[in-house]
Amino acid sequence: MLNPNKFIPKAVEEISQEIKSDRAIIALSGGVDSSVCAELAYRAIGERLQPIYIDTGLMRTGETERIKHIFSHMNLDIVYAKERFLAALKNITDPEEKRNVIGETFIRVFEEEARKLAADYLIQGTIYPDRIESEGGIKSHHNVGGLPSVMDFKKIVEPIKDLYKDEVRKVAWALQLPEEICERMPFPGPGLAVRIIGEVTEEKLEVVREANLIVEEELLDRFCPWQTFAAVIGKGTGVKGDIRAYGWIVAVRAVGSRDGMTAEALELSWDALKHLETRITSEIPRVVRVVYDITPKPPATIEFE
Image (tube, rainbow, N blue to C red):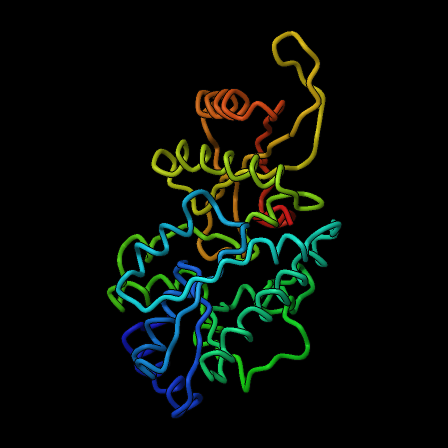
């Protein structure tokens, strides 16, 4: 069993030994994994660390503003790269190719920022389940299997690569990070792109972003899921105002888990599900159908792609 008070000084020392007197950037998403890495790295190399947050355009409502607020105490560099990511994803429908494109685009942006700072190392919050799923051929995580084979860094440093999500949270509490970070719900590195089946478009992004906000508002506090979200899974026929409408189908997911390796769908009340459907179809006119995914992991994964 992980002892955070032993893990922290060991991780700090290892980061210090790897980076020595050089500079490093850290991929900071605002999730618990990257936040823990940022704190460990700051303790190891101090001002030679530059945290960088990339706004890919694949973020939830208010995500960038929230990150700015939470990390206002740090010299956070925000890179706006929506057009670049959407251009890279154009016409791509295969989930693995999508993840690989996102992973490569992330790295290329980080390389450009690192060159400006003369930083030779990239620190990122890869955790053990990311490695298992990528190396096991289940799906490529953008920060593992989705990385390009050639990168302009001396090394990618992954301080928590052997930890499960619940262990990372223990380390976060021991580091005295804010509760909002310690207990933050997982959000995939590729963002809303893996909550869209098929090609990522501006229209699908608008729909899935609005639907995710409604799902989080309705389910987070009431049912305390390990993870909950909405996904756009295709189009179907519906009726809006007595007129045929061909619109989007939104799937809702709410699961309980300990470490993300397995998960069970939560048994939501009928009233909660009906209220969700009513809000989504009325507040997002382009949606004609809402379904609830009851599949556990395995055989499904938690995210749709």
